[in-house]
Image 1 (cartoon, helix red, strand yellow):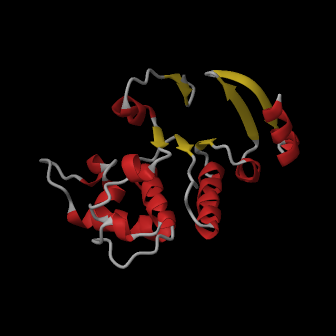
Image 2: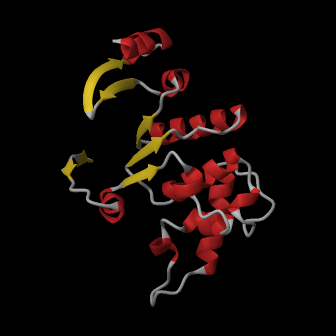
Length: 185
């Protein structure tokens, strides 16, 4: 695999982060957030090195700035950053997961079913966040079986079967009809 033109060997999360790759899992409740931990803790969980002072102590001011910035940028609707993630709606929980991984400043963001179980408003907001990241130069890889969602944000759709690429639709050919037709072959 190559990231930014450089060959990378990814054997785990630490290797992926070092290579500039972040992954938003499909199941946010068991793999994406620490439900009983605070919203703020969740937002900085993957980027603790960035909010740690020399000597290994966490920098409260940096944490507060990062958390506040993520809440604003992702339009996360909260009571307080100290509230547990479990108090949030599904869409806001998903934005916390997204914010946690965006805080690592990845070159490539892989998302598996990023809008599963969220309301229409949150779905639209999450797709807009992904578009902004792609426009800013981030590689965004979306894994989804929601054809309209794929068509709304992707300029290229790859079809994978049994671990192998089985086809591709790109550019102006990325339409609901063409993607569904390709799925049936």
